[in-house]
Amino acid sequence: MSTGFFGDIQKIKYEGPDSTNPLAFRFYNPDEIVAGKRMEDHLRFAVAYWHSFAWEGSDPFGGRTFDRPWYGDEMSKAKLKADVAFEMFSLLGAPFYCFHDADARPEGKNFAESTKNLNEIVDYLGEKQQQTGVKLLWGTANLFSNRRFMAGASTNPDPDVFAYSAATIKTCMDATMKLGGDNYVLWGGREGYETLLNTDLKRELDQMARMLHLVVEYKHKIGFKGTILVEPKPQEPTKHQYDYDVATVYGFLKKYGLENEVKMNIEQGHAILAGHTFEHELALASALGIFGSIDMNRNDYQSGWDTDQFPNNVPEMALAYYQVLLAGGFTTGGTNFDSKLRRQSIDPADLLIGHIGGMDCCARGLKAAAKMVEDGALSKPLSERYSKWDSPEYQKMLRGEYKLDDIAGWVEKQDINPQPKSGRQEYLENVVNRYV
Ligand SMILES: [Mn+2]
Image (cartoon, rainbow, N blue to C red):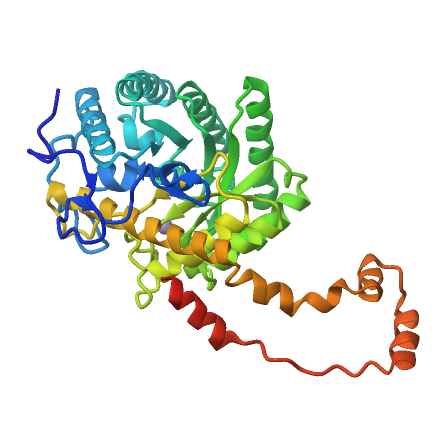
């Protein structure tokens, strides 16, 4: 039974590149085989509950612009929200969704009532999953919106907040497990500081590590088979976030012995905020063995904050999925649209069109990336660039069989005299542009 929210819009179909229908896919064709696998199984699209159904269109200068029939604190409204959300997942053919506890359930008067509300809505979401076949890519806890979290969750100076946060995470991990989620995500939210004048940085890092250990222990205790993911972000809302970027998080995981238990959920917009490209963060996570999943969006390159827009830049997506393919593709991870409409885009159809454009953009990027991999367009010049390392002497050097003075003697004896070679960047950029 339809809620009628999307009017008479029917399931979005693939119509091919020549279609001018705004409510059709031009590139996302779920069953099309790309690099030996169905496109849907490569991309593993998920819709984010929060931006699409919980965010009301506010900005720092004004409140709600969207007019949705599910706004309100009653359980009946939460169920209507779920009805519309699953209608949209089905219209789009999105195989997954993601949610925070606070997106889906009304806040209770205390922890017990919030948990009761969560459990009731989780049962309802479970029924919707059964009816539609849509699955949960990941669950997470919102430990940043309520004023109790204003000074952080696990990193709060008040241990009552640490305990409340731990209890909330427990309920959200239970919910994720019950709904068959493939991952559980921790985004730092307000885990950072506004000023060092009131912050004991070392103590807060120890607290954050304790929470992550608790999460990992509980995962094993309940037999959750999914992946624990941490999502880096350098700033916003706090001036400095502890999960700054992939490199920072990896150092944190190593220090606290968590590097084999936790992987990364990498967001395009957060990479940009950290002064990196998206593909840098993906390549680094892959090199460190902690690549997990993607939050797909884009930032405005001029505004300097996290605008969470739908992706629409195909060359950027091509380079991103190129790294995903090199990393062996997603296992438990996927492509979650952590993307929101602009606040003037108030029509129900805008929600669909934002996702359709994003899915098409990712599909085009994936196809370009797969072709670059297949042709060895970038990998052949790359291995050529490093080919001298294959020689036996340099292999020995790399294995540590020569000490510094051995190498000095060898360089003198062989009269090693390095000759610079072109890095061919313009050539390689032109190659990429051939594929997109
Ligand atoms: Mn973001």
